Amino acid sequence: MSAFIVLGAQWGDEGKGKMTDYLAEEADVVVRYQGGNNAGHTVVVGDKEYKLHLIPSGILYDDKLNVIGNGVVVDPVALFTEIEYLEGLGVKVTPEKLVISDRAQLIMPYHKTLDKLKEIARGKNDIGTTGKGIGPCYTDKVERCGIRVCDLMHQSVFEEKLKENIEMKNQYITKVLGGEALNYDEIKEEYLKYAEKMRPFVQDTSVRVYDEIKADKNVLFEGAQGMLLDIDFGTYPYVTSSNTTAGGVSNGVGVGPTMITNVVGIAKAYTTRVGKGPFPTELNDSMGDWIREKGFEFGVTTGRARRCGWLDLVILKTTARVSGLTSLAVTKIDTLAGLDKVKVCVGYKFNDKVIDYFPASLEDLAKCEPIYEEFDGWDESVANARSYEELPENAKKYLKRIEEFTGTRISIVSVGPKRDQTMRVDEI
Ligand code: GDP
Ligand code: IMO
Ligand code: MG
Image (cartoon, rainbow, N blue to C red; front, side):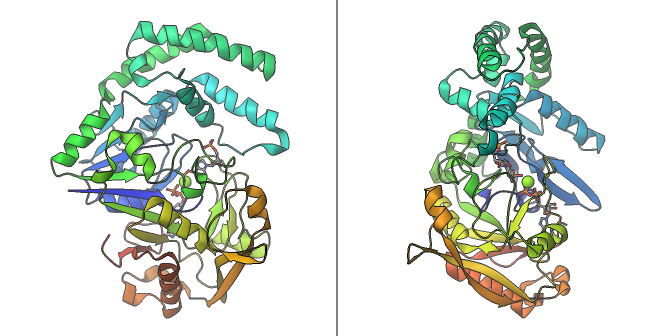
């Protein structure tokens, strides 16, 4: 039995979709445990590119079970749009291949309205959310007025909860945020149709995943977003509303932490971020533009240009600690190919001291000055390497420094978006 977590070690978009797909070959079950369709995971199979948001990346295989756990927020509209998209590309999505937790919270139309109106109300302090209703949905979960998938399965319970919510939300939307009221009957009709479409997929996924692990199956937990978007350990309030770190798996699936055997942190060879918030190694210059163009750094979910900067090892060290990484997978070293020199941040100068952890206060973080080490670059041949030995010497030195600074082994190196542009350099 093995139970692996694959999670983002930076601000998301590290290549989790690609790595999940790569590792899923050896897995029986792929599980999403947090986030929702704010995620955008790209998987390239042959010459086809798939963009997944809510459905686990294992869906592209015919023989894997995919699970949407209780910690995920599920937008039924997005779910069935994605199922249609996949079926259009010849990927079957059946209840044998996909199961959805009866405890997962539903994203309702008012969550999307609130997400957008609150961002407008925040003005220059907006977070830059994806507008998918993620924050307001998790808010309702904690407020204890959320509507769960199991509620949708019981018409009278759903109608009552929807009525209460619509009354409260419409007050807030119209009187505080200046928006337009939503219509109870329209939402009820729409969601009751989704109830019937969803019913065959719904089950107690905590029991299901536990049983799969006990039956010696290999289970892979696919993280969404990344370490610094974590609600507790990220650059709060410029974060998402869930625990993206390894701890999120136990609560988001309902399996005990002792069942997890490996935690693989996915790290891009440089750093990117979408949306607002601090970013110490950001390059607001032609170098940043160069990385964005070469790495095609544009959001999968919103199409926004990603902010780009040098690799920040302080961030990776923090992820290694908080998520207890057993190894790292480094992606996109091919993007940096062709540069004369590349830099990595190995600490921050903060009030005349040098620190190697990520401070909680954004005011303190603003005072942090990155300390860089410079490395000689490598050439484009890196994309053709299929084993560690074939990597250019300078790329190896770069990878060695990552291992040394973070105290974490690198198990996988990715040199392109395709499945075969991936090398296993150590045990997972
Ligand atoms: P995710 O959200 O972590 O799954 O990552 P995204 O899919 O949002 O963004 C990663 C992008 O990089 C996608 O377009 C991938 O196809 C691509 N990608 C993944 N690994 C590599 C790699 O090693 N090299 C290159 N050039 N592209 C990669
Ligand atoms: P994947 O899984 C990168 C960012 C948004 C915004 C903040 C809050 O593809 O790595 P939200 O809509 O979640 O309330 O937005 O989080 N964000 C992501 N950034 N990759 C993601 O997912 C993200 N999901 C959310 O841009 O800054
Ligand atoms: Mg992404």
